[in-house]
Image 1 (cartoon, helix red, strand yellow):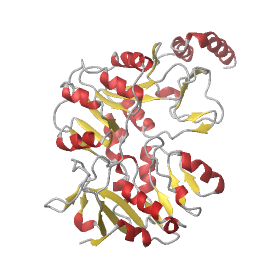
Image 2 (spheres, rainbow, N blue to C red; image 1 turned 60 degrees about the vertical axis):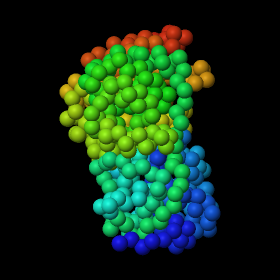
Image 3 (tube, one colour; image 1 turned 180 degrees about the vertical axis):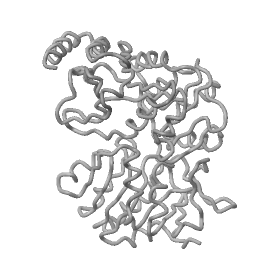
Image 4 (cartoon, helix red, strand yellow; image 1 turned 90 degrees about the vertical axis):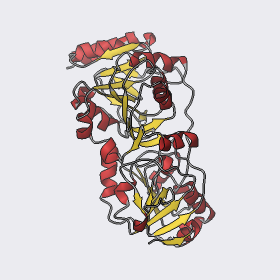
Length: 418
């Protein structure tokens, strides 16, 4: 049986040199972070480990104390300064690699999990986030359960047994919520092109963002779709309520992002089933799903079909996430497709996002042989089976018209040097 304590007492017990796992995305315990901000001296010499996302997680663990440290897998605003002085570690891994890294840690002193109150069988749910907790929970020296009565009890492949908890701390606290931005006409145009490539009966994966939200809204005339994805947002309810998606466990995800009403819906509706990264992002498991359609965004695509997903002018924005895992699985799936979506121009309208070559200093998330379709507001470049020259021509055709002539000249120079 766990010892009953408080989050404040757990924080006061921290000692320099400890490794503390703090979950990210909608699984983050905001009560635990608030307690850390109230006792910043307890954070001196603590190494915080987790998978936190820019634009979703706003807690700055590195900023809690000048001697705090952080290990993360995505670039965060608060992490950037710490990289220069050695207080921060940034690991360039995809989701499968992140899970393996966490699972291989033998020195996690404390793992914090935000869970629902135990049921009559002594089982606690992880609510709307089951991605990485299973990687560290069993091996952590001390397992702290933040029992949050506000957290809905969801269905999932992994649960926390009451008897496996070392310290239980009950504190009702608000959940991390995420409000997506409203799509524009540009995103709607891109979404219509994507809709033409999605077939009835497909299983689809989408990341998060304005384009992805609009793609979901554009699929309401389809039938018998399923979702197998790392994350899902509230617009997916349009597909459930319209009958496009139906049936138990027809939406299999690691994380839900939205408001608290959406989280409760994922608990009440048997269509939702949560799985850890070892199941949602396993390319071999994905490959066994016929007609798997992976739909993901990119920062830029070059004329070979290489994809940069997280850098601008050598400055890292986030990380590659699960993109490589889903693309690999989709390409092995019978009838599967990998679709990359992006606007033709940067947000400020100054730069083409179809480029001659990925700039030096930027990271390639997808190699040229892995791109099946690239979509902008100007159309679809179907790359599978095309020669290098035909691929370049297809990509130039979906670039912004103001940049096509320059791209064509650049390609002619590049082709002459091959």
